[in-house]
Image 1 (cartoon, one colour):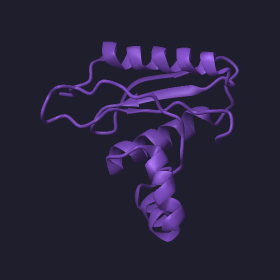
Image 2 (tube, helix red, strand yellow; image 1 turned 90 degrees about the vertical axis):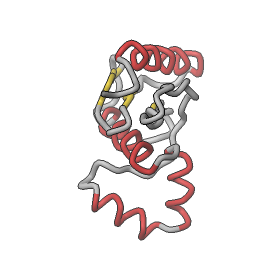
Image 3 (cartoon, one colour; image 1 turned 180 degrees about the vertical axis):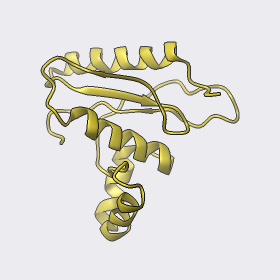
Amino acid sequence: MSGLTLKQANTIVEGAIAKAHEMKVKPLAVIVLDAAGNIVSAQREDNASMFRMDVAMGKAWGAVAMGCSSRALGKRAKDNPNFFLSLASTAKGKFLPAAARAMKTKRAASPESKKPALRLMSPREG
């Protein structure tokens, strides 16, 4: 069982969309994953571009799989692009090592749970 509840995930999504509105970014997609990389909550705003969900999922999945933010993964990928291309290939397209804006969230208190992932894409990104 995931340490992240649907209620918590929906709160994260709502907070991310509210923050995006404050930042006046274009319509976006937000995906919250559990520690196993399963979608707990996902929303795509009206008029968001067709790739928003795919890119949000790739960034969130990569962050969960590697145990760090997609921003950190993007920085690492610049230094070692061949390694990250290999990871993306191994993950069968699920992994997208690219920087993105993300909000900090409270983590589940359960010791066996890992950090949930949150993706908040800005208009400057994919």
